Length: 201
Image (cartoon, rainbow, N blue to C red; front, side, top):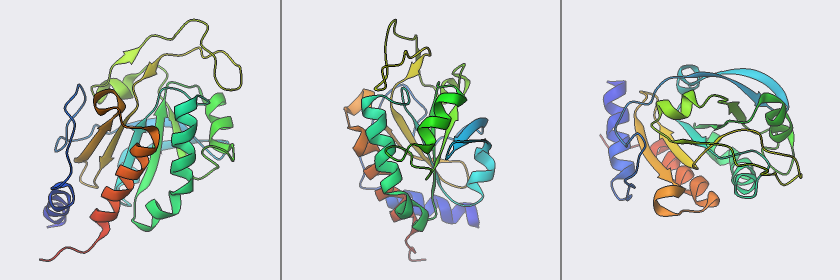
């Protein structure tokens, strides 16, 4: 009954939303479960998607690199809106190929994650690939906004909204429809707020 109810909520919430078509897992598919080392407010934690989904929907967003222009904006916007996601019963996890040391700094920085949500490390791209996302080689001499070299690969900015039954409710990709980093946040928030509203039986 619980799974059927969530299925109904998802269908109602996304009925009017245009979903993109690109190389990634699609709306309606089952999201791969994963465990990862992550950082929350500067401290290393163990993140489990299965455990997070027990509490409600999870916004899983992949981003190219901590301390880069668009990723800084996206993290800041998620942090500013964190209470709204929480009110809707949803949690957030960011994923990149950054190592934990970089993520500890990023997750605690008041200008970006601000200690509001966790960011996970996917150093070999295993999680990204499980979501059918392409992993690109690192760019020689690329530097972050702090002037430090970026020594890891990257994945295109892609956001998945996942319901507690592990179904993908929506996918947003900057590669496909050129949406902005801020759009990833606002579109995800709109959906989880719709999912949180009581639906007529």
